Image (cartoon, rainbow over all chains, first blue to last red; front, side, top):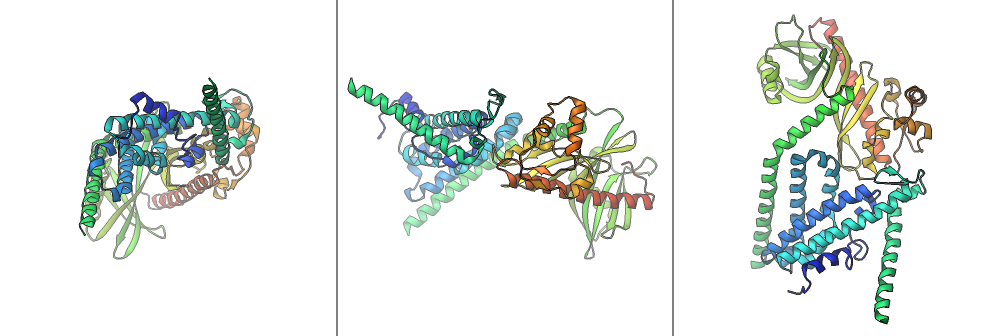
Length: 205
Length: 296
């Protein structure tokens, strides 16, 4: 087993060191298209979190039986199965939540971050580590989406969580998909800068 | 060769496994899902018609079912509707040819509770019209009557959106002007096309008369401030009515970044209403000309 991190480090790794959006730059299309408000970002984040955890665990359980030549179809199949199961169960058990989350769940099938995590981690590591890694990656995605959503909603519609806080709309541009890239890029730069400063200050000590 | 067989075997097995999981979930959840959808539809219908939770005593919601009937290579339209009190049967099935003339009418005497089940209903109609005809269910319309007087129509429909289908429920006055509509199901992009669910978008359609609706188009322009306030119901009632009146003849303002979804909804609703108005006019003229006793 290549992994020598404990569970907490695995979760923290997904949120900070290997944040899917700011560090790995994966699943950018949905991230950019949907993170127009805090709520949208949160919903998509929760949906990804569940699918990522379930898929990681499933692949980890069956890793010895998956033929290396057909890993990718197997991953896709696993993700599609979990997306369908979550979609159907949500529609049956929690119709109110489904009304809000339904559209987010269905678009996850094509997310790069989930496939990539199955390929890089879950197919090599033991089940418990895969669970924590999936949780970390899901949370990392969720945090990233909420942060981007916060900036875009504030600048684009002058509101937070639907409540008008500014009283005017500073830049409608931020609602549009292309602005998502600007926000992600600027945040990447910001986080890298902080990290850089942190590392330097440590190195100097 | 051995590799191919292993790959085929394992992939097949994974597919069977995945299929079993999905199938089981579907079987376990389908009933609850259907029930939830039914409850939602009822709630949407009541809110569109402006009833609070429950319909008043005098109001009746009558279902009219449209069928396509083929007989000896010819196509007919069939309507299954509740018969009048003096008709001697609970329901009546009208067979109308494509020119709008009545071909035949059949009394169908089954209890309303049984007719509510689509399979039972079709079986009863087949028994009533006799052999040699094939019957295909098309759709359901709801005619709202208040004390016997027709007050509104309620129809559900589906049309292609930007990604998949958009399902809506639409309420109309008797002159086919729109009371309002509600999106039942869609998979448009959140933040863009999914904005079709917003009040301000849906309210643009409310009150549009049939004449305006016939040539309704989409304009790519920002919604004027006063109209936006009216659409979001932020104005006092008298002023709101004045602003809405001012924009009544206007086209639909496209959602920012989601022109395709806007056009899809506009065209979808336009064609739903046009077809419905055409069909109802034929049905009504047949009922009137032949003096058929119905309760719609």
